[in-house]
Length: 384
Image (tube, rainbow, N blue to C red):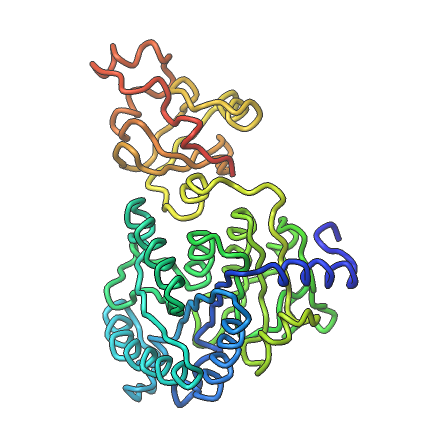
């Protein structure tokens, strides 16, 4: 398989990356932290002990923790799943305080101070707030404090949601340029098939690159308490790899999972970074912003973007879909529907509908003004 290496080479590669890792983002899911009676204190204590050990080794640690909604549901003694935004927000309001109080108490036993950061997607989609979050995390790390980050479920609505904390963890990893994203979950790693139904499925120890074969292997299995299946974890690992970081997916309920990982043991699945790191601003455009619309391009425009590294001009636009303003992120699609790029537009959707298919020299005549020759400048465009 083209995405794998031998056992020996894989272990050597992961040891090399782990030995150099100074800044680590650890994401732990609801299925790891919670059980029928709510937060499982033994699991929390084991996790905190290992995080404190990493801190004592001189590494910076950031924890992305799920569990607020599940903890709230248990604390409220609800026998049925919470449903709808209102119930989830209320359960999160009850559970988040319980989650943080537990973390504060347990981290204090290991002489570690923690800070809570609650985020919505909008906090990272706005460039100024994105940089403010980054600066806050760096300040906390400089002070020797462990940031504990979660989605602000209490106020999040659909357009402000990350979707799952795997995505949030990947975004935070790239935001602060961490060396490794550790995703602790209720499975042992990535398998060639679904191990619950396929007895021939084998665990993949090392992934050198995330290609379509790897994405197809991820399947669509989700845990009982969490929202992110293996597919969301693979997407997060791909996001991190593009930003120059490595990732690990492994069994969060293994009491020594982090100790074993950083000792170089063959546990879980390790994902190598891409050789060529995407620049920070383009990574933000590609992986943090949510597209507000779509531009369908003709074959010549697709070729100009992909093969020749050109900006997008109005002549190559066939169709404009959605309503959006100047500076909005949009997907650029080939005529077969495949997404080929994402970028920030220089004109709103109404104006673009008038400009599709025309020459650059005609923009001012049609609109009465011309802010730019390009619809999307190459500096604001990312090929997918």
